[in-house]
Length: 285
Ligand SMILES: [Zn+2]
Image (cartoon, rainbow, N blue to C red; front, side):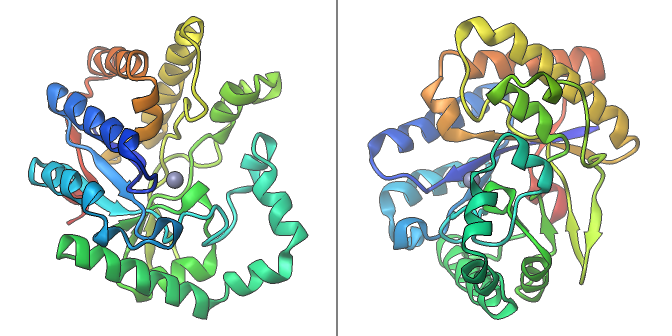
């Protein structure tokens, strides 16, 4: 079995530091011979990302070096395309509460016409930046729904990785609520079809999205190992699994997270024979 390394939110934050974090992540991946799939935000804060040379130049260099860039929302508002799956409410209730307090606004936002408009704009910015069409979409905060899948399909995107296999594990890392500790997956990780014909490929969610302390290293490593063993088992004969991360979190903890991932990936090779890392473009194009 192969694995796809994904990292979200590239192109979103302003300033020099996020770009340096991105470059550090690319250097680290290059050092391990792992090509990444980066999910890229096309219009953060109202600014089309194809016009932002500070970001786009290092991105295009990384792309020329074999890394893959795909679509991550339009503006990256958490409720832009739909709601996160219900089990995420246990550790991240805010977006659900926001939706429920402004239901009329979000029902309009999630109308098919609005979804079509957003996918049209996002894909157009992507094409201007990269000279090709996006292959796969990841919804901001994993918020997605029926109208988003339909509009995505109509815009020509046939793949999504907008669901998490076991959100409880991330919830446990963030809240330490004991009831979130046991393995309780929402999905088995295998691709499935969403009408009218989008293949949804769930991911092994970023357990360290909220960061962690050096003395929590073993806890994070053990939980990652459990998630990966269980996911590989439930994937069965599937061609590949999907590992999710956030480039900015790696960059902020550059002394800790590459060490953690490095030990984890060495263990994946030794324990499960996972030595081949690929990109979504490599798998789906
Ligand atoms: Zn994101």
